[in-house]
Length: 89
Length: 174
Image (cartoon, rainbow over all chains, first blue to last red; front, side, top):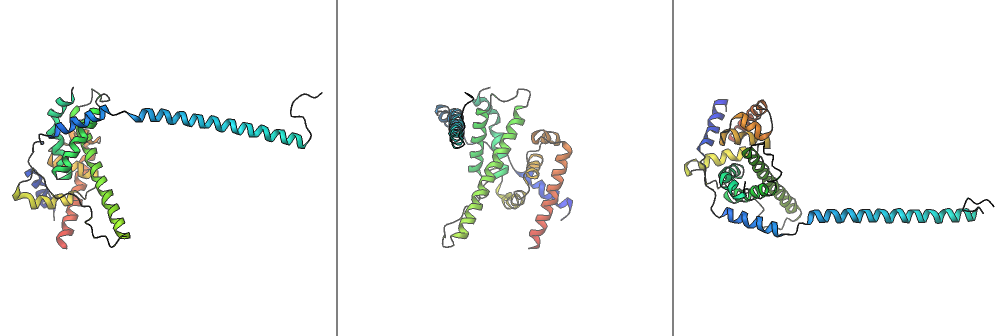
């Protein structure tokens, strides 16, 4: 098949005629639009809730780690018979 | 601009372009609905300096390619599940038959064959070919829609022709 033949093949595409849209289509689109606008938009609210939950979890994790660290420090000081504060006398 | 006005102005453009991608009325209707829903949702974000028709062309192309890819994924999944379930004799998912209302009966067979090859082209080559050869858009208009240079469009169309040539020659040899 040469260039001329492929051009001839592609010229067949010019036989495609334009057609009209089915008349009921806009009614369907309109009902979809109405359903969407009536629906509660969850994405924004969900994003904020998720962010808050993550912040709370991070806070909880930091507090827990701090408490555990302090406990560990105290037990270490006890074992080594050190005072766990800066008061020397 | 209200959605109804936009719909009345561009409905035929969207529907006909969708038909060139999927070649059946049901899928073209689905794409048209998706396009206008998308237009309605992002009307506020539309830049007034951009041409509305170019924007709608872009949305239609993206929606059509999305639907085609979704169908291909479904088909692939059905194929994989059929490998594990050889007793299953249920019919597998197939693309809808060639049912292009813009094609007259006497051209149906020839165009069905041609579209079988066009559908195998890479997305960009297919889009360039559809816009230039079916929608009769100029290279500059096609370049604007596809956000490429006119030279790139020329090269895409050329590569599409070469690929089609190969596919048709191979099919004739079989």
